[in-house]
Length: 305
Image (cartoon, rainbow, N blue to C red; front, side):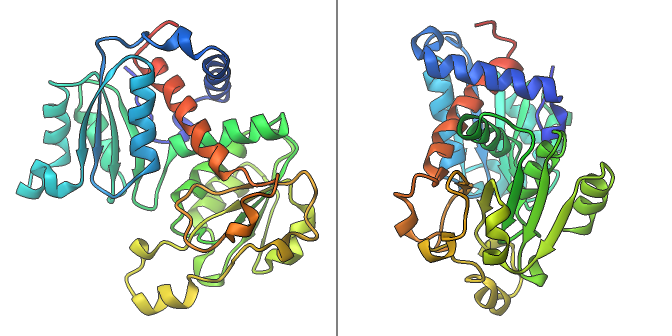
């Protein structure tokens, strides 16, 4: 039995196999419409979510399966003090696979250690978000035709941004990839990600506070929001929340084929004036996430399709 807690739980070959399956789903969705008949996905979301939860649920329905859903700790036995371990054991009696979002880092790992069915980490605190990274990989591959030889700018909240941490882990395994880390000093990439990933594998990177100065060199610009829910101090959030707002003016020196990604939700860090720019890919990213979650469910349930 396999789980997906971190993107590194998948080898590069396995990630590429998932991308190939996603392409097959895109090309022939009818072929996959009943491959999970009789299977049940439990979505356990103890933190607010729109895209990720609905994406998992849509993925399972489009594979012919069913969904059992918990949205919010208040509507579950967690509000009575039930542990993550016990919840995982209970839900294993009802479902065939679990997707869990939790505000505490490591909670999906605890669930995986106690469940008797596969567990997918759908985001744990400021730590990891591997299925968003799968969506990102498919988006980059569909838009650029490759995952190697790319300069990737990561902009905004790099400290608490779990999508950023997972994407760095994934893209660092490809040749010719370099990163430009764009953030306020207070929201710089954590030292453990720099040391354990970038420096450990000798991945070139630079840190800057200057988005416009970095723009001409980027093949991918990955924008993130400053996350109010990760701050202990409201004053710090208000001071930093508008650090980077992407506008058409700021794109004037960008490459014509640069692609703009964002894990969403967007607050105001990307102007709506950019939505019609052909370089904007963040709504395509949402759709790609559904395809990759479909591919992942098939893999973890060991369904041949």
